[in-house]
Image (cartoon, rainbow over all chains, first blue to last red; front, side, top):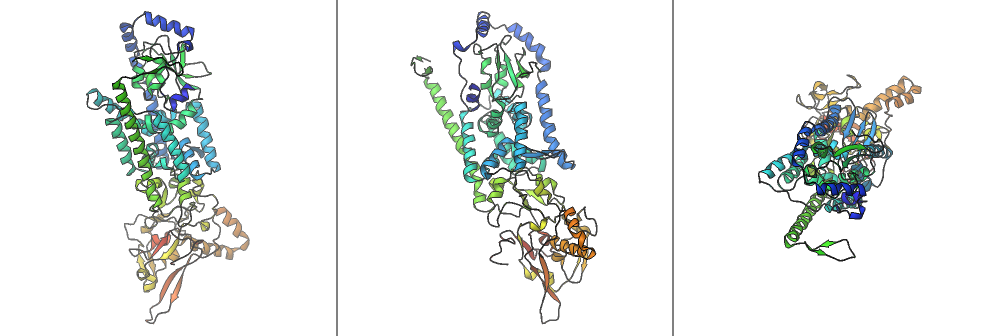
Length: 319
Length: 296
C-alpha cells in the first residue's frame, strides 16, 4: 500500500514506533548509542570504489544493445527486432509497450489479437523483471536524461543552476488526464510529446523536428529541474511501476551495516523510495524498495556497505 | 516546528513561513508544469482537427476519404510497416502533424506503393489493426483515387510519345518491372522507355498489369488460375483501374486521354511515373472507389 502511495506521488510516511519490529528497534538503538564512525565509513567506501560503476555499466550496455538491435535489424534487414519501442516483433513474436498499448486501446476502443498478444508478453516480461526496470534499462530517453543530470549536477555544484522540485502527485494527474484525453478525443495525445517514442523512432528511422522537443525537455532538466520528465511527467513510469509492484525482482535494504550517510538518496532518480535508509526509519532489518524504483542500481553502486542489493524474491539469493 | 496535538488526524505540523512560501512556490510551479505539458500536447490536436494531417496512407488504413480518425487512434507509431515495405514507400510523419506524429504516410510522387510485395506486407506487419487485416488483395485497397488534375500537361492528350527515363536520370524512386525481375524493384532511372504515344500511367498501373497477367494465365489454362492467384497472394482484380480512350480531334493527330475507372485503388504509381512537372495525374485522397463524388 505504502508502495502504491509513493508511486502515485505521496511523500513517504514516517513509521510509527509501534510498526518497527523489535529487531530493527534494537539496531536503531545501537546506532543511536554509537555515533557515526567516519573512519569505518571511509574504509568501507574505499574498499567499495572498484564496484562503483558495476551496475551502471551493465545497464548502459543493455540499454544500448536493445536500442541498437532495433537499428541494426532494420539497417541490415535481418528481421530480428522489427519496429520501435512502442511496438515491435522479436523474431516474429509481437511485443507492445504497455503504455502505448493502453493509449491506443483507450483511443481506438478496440484491441486486435496481435496487440493483445504483444501486450500480454510485455506484461509478463516486466512482471518478472521488475516493472520500471524498463525505464532505466531500456528507455533511450533515460540515458540522455542521465547525461543531462550529470551536467545539471556539475553546474549545480558550481552554483550556476538550482534544482527546483515539483509536487510528485502531478505525475498521477498527468496519467489520469492523458488517459482521459485518449478516451475522449480518440487520439493518442500523450504520444505526441512522449520523448521515449520520439527518441526510439529517431534512432531507428532518423531524427527529425521532434528531437527539438526532446532537446527542450533536456534543457529544462539541465537548467531548471533535475530529471523533471521521469520524475514528474512520464505516465509510462506509472504504468510500469504498477506492474513492478508485484515483481519479485527488486532492490533490498539491509539495515545492519548502513551508515545512513545518504549517498544512495543523492544518486537516486526517485529518492522517496529510499526513505527507509534515513536513520531510524527502517521498520524491519530488511526492507524491500517500493514499486517506483527503476532498479537502475545506482544506489547499489554507490552504497559502500552493500546494504542495498539486488534480490529476486523467492530465490533467496543475492545477485 | 510546533507539534499541534489534534488526535483525529496523523500529527499535522504547523509550518514556518519560509516552508509555507516554498510550498506555495512549488504548487505554482507544479500548476505551470501541468498546464504547459497538457497545453503543448493539446496543441498537437490542432493539425488533426483542421484536417492538415490528411495524407496518402498505406493500404488498408482505417479511413474513409474524409475521415482518418480511426486510423490515427489505432496507430501505435512503431513503423513496422515502414520496415517491411520493399520499395520504401512508407514514411513516418513529423512533429508538425501534431497527434499525427509517427504515423505512416506515402509521398506518391517521390515513391509510390507499387504492390511489389503482392501480399500487403505492411498490413500484415501492423500490430494494432490500424492497417486493417480485412484486406486480402491489392485490388481491395482504397487509398485514394487517381484524378487527371492537369489535362493540358498530359502527353497522351497532346498526342506526344515519350522517350527516355520517365522522371529523369536523377530520380531515386524504384518500381517493380516484371520483365526485369519479379522480386527486385529497380530504379525507374534504369528503365528508359521509347513510346510512340505516352501510356505510362496505364502501362505501369499495378492493377492493369495484374489484369493482363491474369488474362494470360487464363489463356494458358483456365484450371490453374485459382492456384496461381492464391500462391501469389494477388487475386485477379475484378475491375479495370485506368484506360486510354481515343479523343476525336480535327487536326489529324492521334490523341488519347487517360480515364480512371472503378478499379483504381489510389496506389499512386501513375502520379509517380507521369513525366511532366507537375504531373498530369495525381492521387486524390479525398476520394476512393467506394466514395466517388464531386469532381472526377
